[in-house]
Image (cartoon, rainbow, N blue to C red):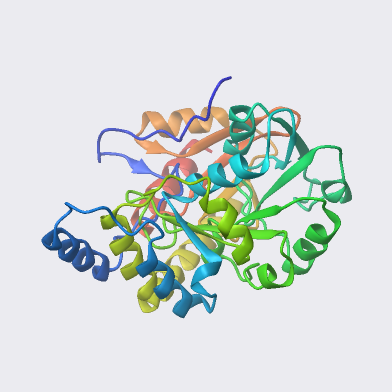
Length: 338
């Protein structure tokens, strides 16, 4: 197998980094204080195996009972746990295409088969995405999707889950930048699980913390699969402080949405076709010229964006929403190239 290849992480700060959808701003000051307090208490003991402090705080913020949540070492850890729990060797995992390429890797690690169902050209889901199939054990739905930033509405997600013969994991890694989410659907359908991460909207990509929401009897079985202590004391303390600072989140979200709108409008004026995004990135193609040379020229000038080529679909550039000054530099260089 080829294995999942993460976005490029240069070993220098002397680049404009718009390739891995990181938050360009520092996390809440409450996180710094929480980590320092955890260090002062010492790290000689194991952390709480369920991240109970986070579950209690997240319960208050989200209105979800604490025992409906399980913490993970980033949402990728949770995707791995769910795949290991649900899909056996030779069985089937379904995912939309193009989407997060890790899903297919997780199926390969299980010795399972994966079925990629192509999005419609407007990035909507075809009816075949909800069809039953022999040995279908799990369906992944990134919502918002990457690389497009598009969203399937909750009512469509619920209808999809009710038609499927297996669990549906809604991957909401970017949902804090969207207008709607699927969290309420978990209580309405036991087949729906929702995973989230603090990497994007809470600016904690370097910390690694996520959580999945599911009905308690589902969580009970997932716990059997996870590592005993899959989240460390520092990440639990930081994540608890982060999700508790909703004022910071609202302010950060507003800044990123404003920059996203300006980025999309400016790229459109440069002749790019910009897919309307509800994430912290935009997906662009160009009707008149290939985009790979643009990616390569930007990289030569110290500007990293993500070039992605999907056989049978096409290629494009995924550009993360950076700070305003980063976006200004990227747009200036693209304008010069055009």
